[in-house]
Image 1 (cartoon, rainbow, N blue to C red):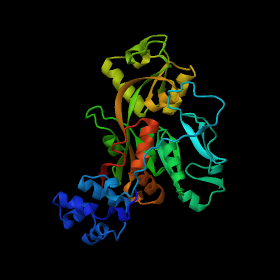
Image 2 (cartoon, one colour):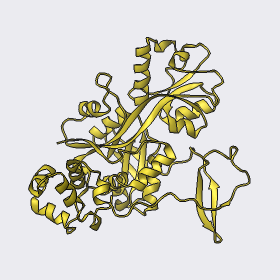
Image 3 (cartoon, helix red, strand yellow):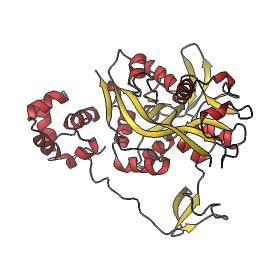
Image 4 (spheres, rainbow, N blue to C red):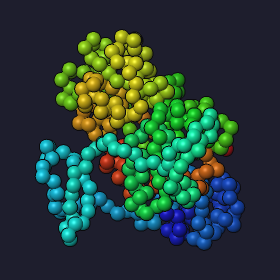
Length: 378
């Protein structure tokens, strides 16, 4: 979120269009009238939280009010194909890496998902109950620039790539876990961000009740990342003719499942209950895997015939996909950490239309609300 001179006039115009005085807007946003005047004149660069508050009170996005020209469009370029084989399906959207080599732009195919050795900041020398001794080559500055994000969204890798391409000092570190565990880790001060997609069966609302139940004693902000499709991934071309959850009762069908407390597991259990189906009759129901990509990989490698996951994971492994419902995936941060370097960099990315377009194109997520403040608990 670029907030400097581009914001001149936009806040004043939006405020005037809604008949809100400068004093009233300043009061609603929790800042002084003088500070708001300085912001409107371009003399003061607001913090992330102030920018979010102003945008919320004016019914605008932060991008609309503060962004510089972030409207670079997706362009089509002619490149050299640097691979001995062409894509198996020339009509498919093959993902590539791009680089200039010997004066030519080269395209190299990239897998939609991959397994690799993860870089590490250090090695544990001694582990106690609550403390540990770690050997590390990282400097204090590098440690301070690490962003810990707990949750199940595989698009965290794209966020990390976005930050790296902008030469940001922030390194995004993904901790794969269920939504419930992510909230528990945030509540204990173990991560900067918790990603959640937990539906309240009674109200149908996403995340807010779960966030309140897990954390109610510290001001926090819930910011939208995207909306995605959750559904049943099945073997490519669906040779078993699976049409819905009722088919999982067939004795020859094996599934893999997410862990208890995950949004996918809760969704499956909720759907089964509505259909009057017993989970104990489903082969593989107790076999748990830690993430959406792991579910898809197990199906693609013939370890299972089906599993509940998100569309982007199924697409990454070329699986057929049967939609169950659309979900809202939000990111939860503590308000007093929102201005810190790592969290601030993430919020700035979420309020970039260009980043939203990349996520939309690469993951087929609905990013129309990306960066919007869903709730702010003081």
